[in-house]
Amino acid sequence: MNKKKIEVKVFFNESCEICKKEIDIYKKMKNKLEWFDINNKEALLTNLNKDQLSRRLHVLNEGKLVKGAKAFLIVWSNIPKLNFLYKVFSLPIFYHFFAIFYEIIAFALYLKNKYR
Image (tube, rainbow, N blue to C red):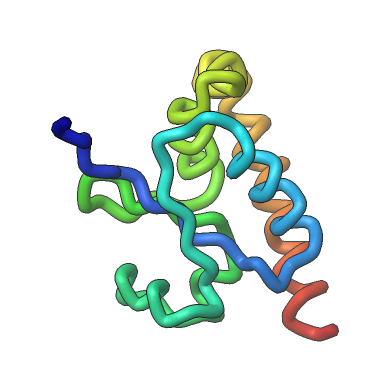
């Protein structure tokens, strides 16, 4: 049996309660993703420090590091049950608003977790 190598690695902050809850839901769904808590040494795969990684969701996709809203699109495109989110939010008119909304929420979560 020939297993296909996982090409998408997701870096998330498990110490962020909201982030962890969302990622735990994704992990339970059928997906082709490999999950890494940024608080562990595996996060060194990105060449970014913990503070940089905790600012946004990061995905290593075929050797390229992608962050923020684009990273979420990659995650959703690799989870069959959530592929509809990828299709909707990758449309330019929706992506623009999604990216702005994501940055606001991500920054608020970053500050909440940094100063707790």
